[in-house]
Image 1 (cartoon, rainbow, N blue to C red):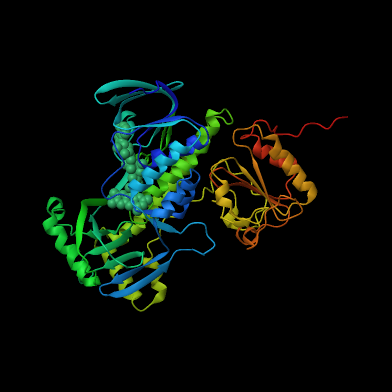
Image 2: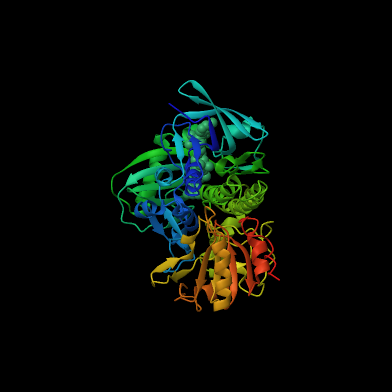
Amino acid sequence: MTLPSRVPVLIVGGGPVGLTLAALLARYGIASLTLEADDSYCSGSRAICISRRSQEILSWTGADAALTATGLPWTGGRSYYRDREVLRFDMPHDPLQRFAPMVNIQQYFVEEYAHQAMLRQPGRATLQWAARAVAVRPEADGVRVEADLDGQRRTIQADWLVACDGGRSSVREALGLKLEGMQYEGRYVIVDIEQASSRPVERLAWFDPPSNPGSTLLMHRQPGNVWRVDYQIRDDEDAAEAVKPGNVLPRVQSHLDMIGETAPWKPLWISLYNAKCLTLERYRHGRVLFAGDAAHLVPIFGVRGLNSGLDDAGNLAWKLAWVLRGQAQPDLLDSYSDERVHATRQNLAYGAKSTEFMAPPDYGFRLMREAALRLALTDEHVRPLINPRQSAPIAYPGSLLNLADGAPRQSPGAAPGQPAPDLLLADADMAPCYLSACFGQGFVLLACAPDTAQAQRLRALAGATRTAPDPLRLLPVGGAAPDAWGDPHGHLRDRFGARPGSVYLLRPDGYVLGRWDHPDDCILRAALAPYYPMIPATAPEPHA
Ligand SMILES: Cc1cc2nc3c(=O)[nH]c(=O)nc-3n(C[C@H](O)[C@H](O)[C@H](O)COP(=O)(O)OP(=O)(O)OC[C@H]3O[C@@H](n4cnc5c(N)ncnc54)[C@H](O)[C@@H]3O)c2cc1C
């Protein structure tokens, strides 16, 4: 086995986050080596619900086609209290959107598709199976890692190391870092079963169902006639006993009987879960960065674990690429930590609320849940309280990267630090195109109906970056420019609050960096110069 002895980026952990990061970096032309301790993709009950934002991030690598072909899209769900429906919810969705709000798909497929995407990218990305990082030594200009491959030791020198080695991260341990936070006592048995069914794909929850009195039970359909069944066990139940098939199968059977699923079935995996709300205080430690479960553990309720890990990868990939290419200073990577720690804290707050509902930690929470469920039977105003709050991208309103808001009267949903709302536009040939498909490359300058002079000035700015590896992309929408895209659904006006002359600078990960009404060149140059050094912050002096 030949492994490179020096790499720009070493990724420890080839789970979904490590592999997606490798694919994104390769898309930016950045070589990486991923060490994965196991010899194949994950098995067992892991993530199944992949959010719209995660689908977008995977699309930047080209992994979305396989994901969409295999995954089961869904838009809502139902909750029952005992034998009565108390909530029917729909996630924000309209048929013009590029991706479903959520698809159900087993985590090992996500890993496989990210891996295939990584191999298709032009940058050199290598995955080494059965290779475990066993020692990590941070150095002034990089990181030195000892890896174990089939009992043989290898030393690898990396400019940057990204720890994607999961909840029990050995990199975290090697650096003497600890996750901080709390974990809940309530335990859930997680069972994946195989059973043919024609039931629609939706999130199903039962509180105190006749099939399992006193318990809470969740069901999610997955590709290949697989169902995820999660149910809460009593506090006094013994963990080892609770996962024995002799105890699990009758409870599952009782529920299948209750909902009228009569086809033969068999269990695939049985495990036990309890929710944790834990995070590192910082995700950058010199030249070591943390992403995914190595950085944070978020409760599964609300499905923000893998989804937030993919957001970590989307945030980190462009920043690492810009730093490695010398297009930005290394302190850009501090913003990765600031932004993603902020996102984790938000995710933990949502995750904690969901957990307190799904596995009430004490008598007070149990009583409140009981009251909410009883009231929800008759009072529709109470029903939002039991909505499961599924994963959504988190805004970074306090990010130091954000530029002063030059158009504060426009839509707050497109202010600096917000994830740019997606737009269904029509390109110059009238073919439908999504704004989100433009991300994962260079920055985007989105211009609303620029007049001829403004379009010319913006084009000159974009043209100045054409020698950069990922140049600035000008996207004029409406107006006089011959290459302008159309906005047949009025999305730019409605979702951004754009007016003719408005300009938006969007980051490669799809976040709004700045917005202005009729910005002059000085403003735009100053905004772009930190990322495109060929653009001087001030315009050249006019000739005398
Ligand atoms: C029952 C369950 C249901 C879930 N459902 C959802 C869901 O629906 N949606 C969601 O978003 N999240 C969900 N999650 C969370 C999700 O599974 C995790 O957040 C996700 O696996 C994190 O990915 P990762 O790549 O960071 O870490 P992992 O998936 O843990 O991958 C880490 C990898 O690092 C490798 N590794 C470890 N140590 C080393 C080492 N020293 N050297 C080399 N390799 C190493 C491991 O072998 C592993 O492959 C669920 C989790 C569980 C348990």
